[in-house]
Image (cartoon, rainbow, N blue to C red; front, top):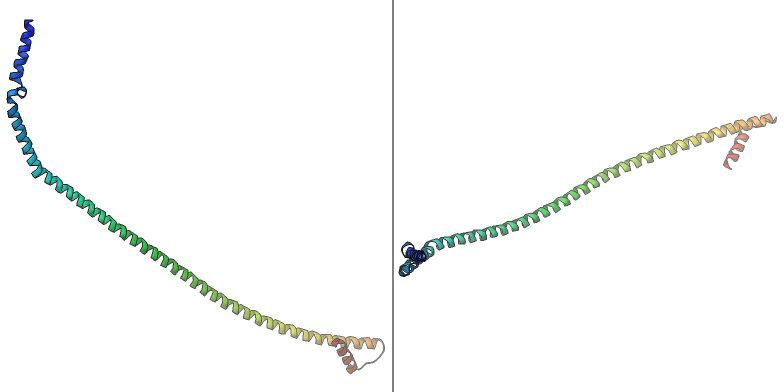
Length: 178
């Protein structure tokens, strides 16, 4: 048992000599320096660190607000640019439609002129053909009259009669009229 007592005394003596923070006689001194340290840390933080942190936060907030305002401005510019693009596109489409319509009108005008020219040429050829046909009919009638007169004269001569040219012409003319 003597060893047990001696071990407890040695542990109590070590706590008194080896660890001053656990010694109750040094507690007021430790509390004083704790309060001094906390006051110093408070003043250092409140006078140096926290103003710097708040200025950095204010600067970041200002930068963010400026960036948001710039983004809004760019968004408005983008909307304006899109409107200008849409308007330019509509104008270009209208101009293209006008050009196409002008081209159609020009082609239609050229086509109308060509059709009118072709119609005039066809009408001239038709008139010329009708005149040629009339001339051919006239010549054919004259040829038919001549053949009819010669045939009638030959037929009358074949029957043994004699007819004069005036009588044969009158008979052929009367027969051709109807």
